[in-house]
Image (tube, rainbow, N blue to C red; front, side):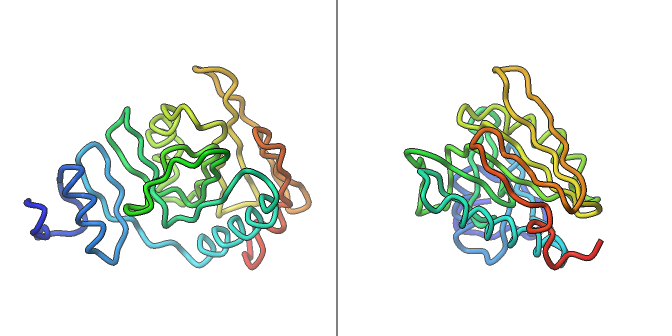
Length: 194
């Protein structure tokens, strides 16, 4: 596929990084780039969209007077050691931002949020987390369930070990330890009927 041609199928195809970035600028849909394979992102459910909006709303308020900034699912993260790009559901970057505004690429996320679904949970917990862990800037990975009031936070302890904390129940709060942030689960699950 040349950079000026669109593929015959737009669900999955192979491309170079330059072709992928060009295609992203000409397509209304978003695509992850998984070691040369371009994969269409599935649309989110109503609950997924509500949780995502709630995460961004809470982060925006909490981070307002800090050196950190929230990013929506419209910003992709580059994982150079795995030659891949993913669009996390939300992210936080702190300090000096390393962002390519032209292509919407964040290079130095501090915290990444993924909202789990039946179709993505195994990948989000497995291979995607393995890829994200190669980012030197990443301090915490947060998985949010759509099926229960349940949030898991994975905090880096050293290069090869991560500490997991589980937060459950609508009356509990989530603690993002790497940034000392607290978010009420009831706020994350606002408008979601479980």
